[in-house]
Image (cartoon, rainbow, N blue to C red; front, side):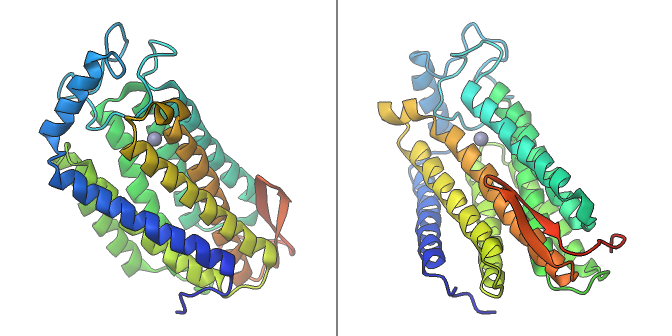
Length: 315
Ligand SMILES: [Zn+2]
């Protein structure tokens, strides 16, 4: 499979992605090296709580670090500022967008009678959105799992979609599905049994995402439809911008400007759009293999794949 693309723009995006990925990995390693494990995080929380920024006084759900039942990471957004019913209002509100794009992707492509793998992706991404709402609204550890575990499962669905893109209609890859299922079960145990080690989850999710992006980029280089190619490029760009914002928020939260910008909420919006565009690109490719003469219709930001011929019964 050729991994270099024929598009200079995409090469630049891939370069940025590689740099940000390396930064994330270095960030995780440095955090560990500095002892940013449970004790260090508790100390940070205690300091933050002392100024009321991340504290839980007068709130409905309590706060991070108060008891063993709370999440291992508190994001930059100040807690319970907008309403006592929601820990991080803007992070929670933008999480709803994740859920909305999953519903849109499902509804917009219903007539194409896509295979179950795409249903898994739609449901999985919707579950990520619902888990994210739950997590940012409460900052409970159980809610954190409801946010993080679907991210791992939907990544496995993405891998299946990408690897099986060019399969003949009707072919099922049982071995691949079993391997992805087993691997995801094992990786899912990490955040369950090591609740204070968010870095393990970030590493697993980061590697899975990188593999999926590199495989998708290989597929992108093989198609000529400019609208479908542009969808992937926009999706990748949106995702990379989101990752950069996530990284800045994570590493520079002590800066007053970063605290005001709500960068994690922007990450939600960028990743939602990125997922929608890249998923639509995968749908285009699959419909092309099914000889549906697909084309990209609608208008940005809500484009979708349409079939140029009548769609037969789902394969
Ligand atoms: Zn989030």
